[in-house]
Image (cartoon, rainbow, N blue to C red; front, top):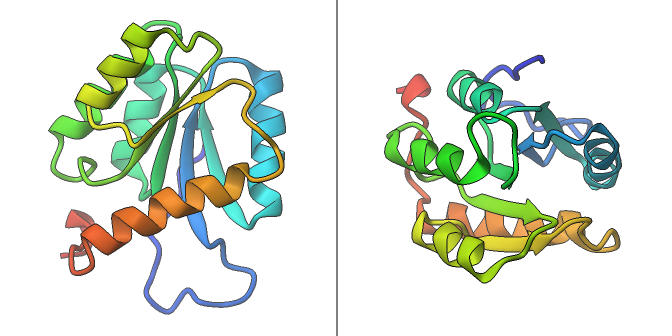
Length: 152
């Protein structure tokens, strides 16, 4: 799994991604389809297949949003989110859960952990990227002057 270098302020060329998402998903077929949808919207996606790999990628890279499956091998998505929200370098990054098991208990726990959305799997293809970009824009509006710890 490759991680992304930090985005530089001058990185504004037309081929630059408009957002970077860490997608933690253990089903390769679903990850492939979701990545296709997001890439067509100029969103760069890094995929991790376990919660542990997702945490490692999140701490090494710089992402605009975490898209997390709940049912992962090893550390589940809820625990991953809890750990990400405890860390100063990742706590302000919005987390969106995506799951095939939209149990009310999972939804309540996701909200308690600070998730901004809870989506069914598979998500709707026609506006999925736009929805995630709205969450990213909302997060940027709430923290307009914050900077990544790695850049200070």
